[in-house]
Image (cartoon, rainbow, N blue to C red; front, top):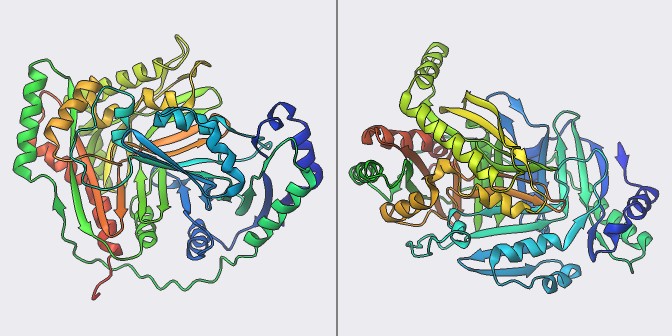
Length: 507
């Protein structure tokens, strides 16, 4: 063991935060750090997910661009609460009886207001120099959750039989430090004014000891990827998709909108290992946001390149991505595609429109004059495509909370269009079914007011054995229908390839 929270540390954390320890739901993390130079995030998560005593595990990883790995990988399990949204209804499922009191904190009947009440009911005493996520609410909020905020009715065809959103409230984490090659075991028990500090600490240490006894080295894994043909069905054929593009262009010419993002969904049956699918996806399509979330029959597996909104202290960030080319077969072809992309007036005008939209979104929740562009129109390359990327930030106004900041930019303009509300209405008219997870967000709220949510693109939704992926293209006045259709095919290719390499032959 390299480092460990001692009883003296624990008492110090409690006593140094008297304003927080008066709350019923104050979490005080107990941490142990171990050497892990023979482990990987995948081996650790595999051991956790194979152990039936660990429920609803998740893993968050990051690979910036093509080569650089993020410093931390986050693994969570055994949430103390599940929060599920179904349309304009919600359900609170207590998984740990010691948190049963939290239901009494919820007064609102509105799902997002209820979620904010739950988040506000829990606070955390953050240790110095700890990673950004040591406890929090992790999951997804689907595209259709915007109907809880804006006047866009829930009248689309609901055909996927999954919740509008699900979040698990986690206080059990294992954090892999990819730089130091260490594992940080975190259990954050809650402590009230009437609890014995010594008793809470002892129980927390006992719980951590049981977790640290798990071996991450032994594995029965025999998975060898082999490419297997997969039959895909789309909810739109090519002719209909291109017809929808023309219909959207007519509305643009009529002045209804400037841009709209139209998508198609691909579906197949998948009866193999969901985690093996994630393992393949993270190799063939490394991205800033890599995630695997296990909500029992529902698995969310993704490699999103695009931040939706992040809050770090009082700084709010968003990151518009618009403008796409396929990767070249050679470095020279890559360079040629990048040059072509940065000279494409259609792509540039679309990107500038979405940067302005991002600035306006942050302006709703940030202090006046604080919103600015950090980085403008840089090309980033991923496994199958390259994109134009910009970064926008501002200072969060103290009267606004994290959920309000998230929904100020939700859904991303890169997944809806501009103006957003009319674009969403047109999407409802032209797309035959609900988007569900696609175009929503995957990420977390921590219990200190920070958050990090990516856009749910390049994302696989596995509901029992029904696997779906979805991809879209931004339609503007001079869009060519066939090219927009090809863009949806290019964007979905990495996911399709991952499924093909994860499907076992001769079943």
